[in-house]
Length: 306
Image (tube, rainbow, N blue to C red; front, side, top):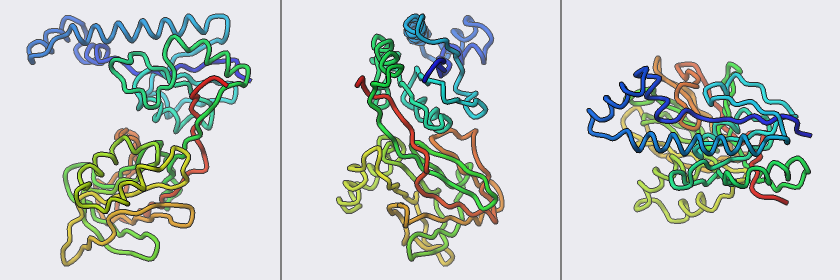
């Protein structure tokens, strides 16, 4: 079934600094001049590469492999014979799942002291067992619901955790929102749409902000959503009521029969992006209409051996 492993990784902080400053010495000078210390960044870098080398060693004799940086995900074509392994923070699983076409993903935690590992169900030392179980078809998977957004011009975007619909900078978003039987013009800081898997992400900060004001059932209903629940939640950030804008539709659940539609009223600077990746965005300016619902694709995360 699988004869090739695709290892998806991110650059370490040390590598990002060296990309910017060309050399380690110049990066060290910049960090220490700013009051920081390079030793923690170096130690983090070393731990990551120790984990990566261990992972590669465990693939020896099992699968051929290719390592790609997360920046190549939008253009990389995954195939049915690919077993996907991410090694990095939780967000790397979310970013990869959007392009994985339903192929299994083994999320490896390279440093449990640094990463929470909500989506990283495999420790480095367990990689070989997980791969062997996948090759034998004996793994258990969590099927994770993703969100889908379509524009009226045919463009489409998936989200593992959440969508942001709004302005590209600190200005007010203007749009017409429609959900179930309600429709109104709004001005706000933008709209968040989140999946069940995204409840520990950006949406959680919104719920924390309004916890003291929202009905408890609203918060609890979303927090009880499982990863496979075929519902999404949306929240309007800081809606402003005026003569031209209302603030009645501030949150809601999105399902198969309850889509969310948003029509842009912004002449410029309107954007839509998913899972916090701002550089991979769709323009959302006047005339654009976005429809948001549950995606037909599912992410498949390896959670244990069978």
